[in-house]
Length: 425
Image (cartoon, rainbow, N blue to C red):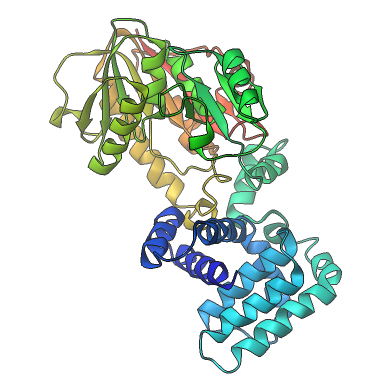
């Protein structure tokens, strides 16, 4: 366990210094090629869990320290260990002993004693320590204060449930490939494979427990894909028909690209500005047995890559703060700054203006973000409609989107997304 604690502590420290968690973990695993698959899995779980509840763990730790801790690794090791004691199923005795051994690896004479004392004091005083956090919203919800304030202002009736939803473990949701099967038939295959699940609609299935994709029936043959239910609304709302020219802008990793192609025989152009991410799109399409024209380019400057032929449908899944998918990307809470919202909103504005020129008359553009902040969503679309007289906002099909002006709030069955369907009139 101490190896996993060490790697998780290093990962947490690097994220708090501003790095992306998935990149950090992959780099650490490459640097430690001899660790077991179980150690990798535990390291990842501890890093995600610690960052999910970081500000609460930090508030607890500050109560336990007599003076500020200047040794960063020991600080982060204590956070990881407190996460284990507060949220994990591992035995308290084992957690403390392994953390002390991990501290000993630093060769600092004081580290073992400090780690041992802090963790044992937490176990003795836990109830009293947690009581002192009752009025501390940052500790209670484990989000930055600016984030809490913004949701309170924009969602006065839902802010607390949205914060709590973002701290849950995300479900594993599948999209059944309609070219092969439907949810009912695939459910039978899952049951035969001893994988309990429930259907969410005709194509979406939520597993009771997450499993490696290798256990999914027909996965390598393209019979199903892993995709959040909320993200599956995109292809349905886009409503592409056979023979149409379709552009999926900012397409990587290709989940929505594949879904559109599963639903209709269209001439698909899948565009992204990152060559490596386009390779991932191609891999996903190959597994599904589907084809698209992959183009590397910038959605905000289409003249550099557009062939001049207008598109009947455009899917604009634009860069955003990702504030609606924090339970899958726990580092987002600590990497984002409030001023980032305005920067993303400006980037989205430029992309939307650039892509609009590519849309055929009568064509439809679906604007999508995985954000819950109004500046990137309702306000962005309202501003676009004011500046673009040939744009009309169309009603959305899904009940959950209709009831909240295109905003899908994060909840038990899906993450948070925003949708707006625009037609060129």
